[in-house]
Image (cartoon, rainbow, N blue to C red; front, side, top):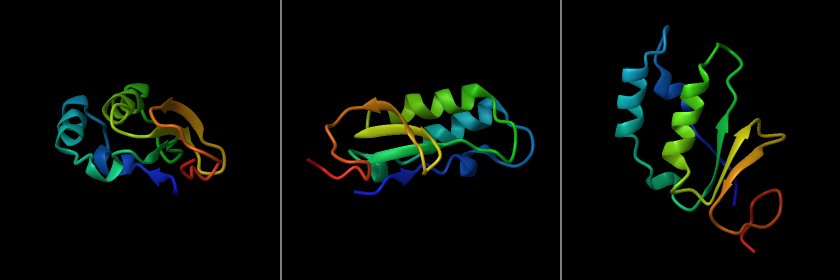
Length: 93
């Protein structure tokens, strides 16, 4: 099972990040593709992202994913583990 990259950039919009707009985008998000899957919230290097953006994304995803990681694909940091998973490529054990 491969890690699914959460498309955080798609929820941010262009320019200034507004909390109300981000909350609305996050609320409309279909979580079905992420259910019981290993998911990674990426660190975005291209612009300054407020920490609350990452925290809200983690709070939304944590209850439904198998494993929630943060960072970069080469070295993700596991934040939440709801389901026992195997090796680094997250194959079921």
